[in-house]
Structure formats: structure tokens, C-alpha cells
Length: 165
Image (cartoon, rainbow, N blue to C red; front, side, top):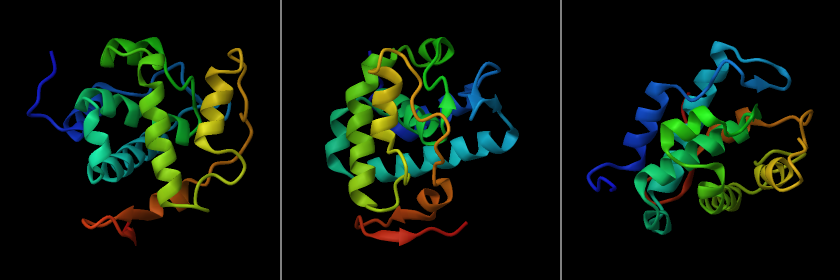
């Protein structure tokens, strides 16, 4: 049963409060730092702001979209594994359950900010390499332009704006 009074941001905040990075997670083959957690939060906020203003995302349950936002944040930051059993226990969703929603969110993001997505490998390609290429990890050493993505947002009318830091 889904609670209708909660928005995706409420679920994202809940997931973040429970923890969405774990001891076994890595970033570019290294252990995670506190800075990575801050970037996960920034990306989650970014994806929430991006999706909350677009009517088409209201077709998804808030908890489902929130789990997708966590997945997109982890993929954007190249945290591996991108989805794990701890997240399944937290969200009650398997990676395959949010695959279609992830593709919708990521493609919308790339449409809104052409030329500002990761230069060498898009999130869609990275997702496909990770989960639809026999489990092989593609794109491990490719850089992600985190600073550029976090620099832009949408105002209340859906226009692109530069965000204050």
C-alpha cells in the first residue's frame, strides 16, 4: 500500500537518513569518503528538483521515484555496486523494478542539459554496461563531470538556471 500524502522528496530524505552508501561500496575502486556522501545528497536533491516539476513523473509512486533518484545519484557518482541488497531491504525494490523509471529520469536529465552530461560515458550507457552486459563493469575508469551537473537546475517555470552553492 502506498501513502499518497508523501512526495518523492520525503522518501528520499528517509532513505538518506537510513543510509544509502555502505561499507562495501567503492568509488573508482577506492573506499568512499565523507565527501561522497555529501555529493550523493546533492545529486538526490538535484534529481528531486528536476523530476518534481515535470508532470510525467507523477505516474510513478513517490517511493518508486525516490528509489530511482537514489540509483541515479549513485550512478552519476560512479558508486559501485550501483544497487545492492541493503538498498533492496531499504526500498523494497530490486534494481530491475526501477530500471524503466531510471531510464526516464536519466534521459529527461540529458534532454534538459545537453552537453553537460558526463563527457565520456552517459549514465544511460553506464547503466546498460553495468546491468545489461552480462554483469561486466564497463566504464570504471571514466571521469564524470560532477561539478557541471550540480551547477544547473530548473526554476519554477522549468527554465534552466545556474544554482548557487
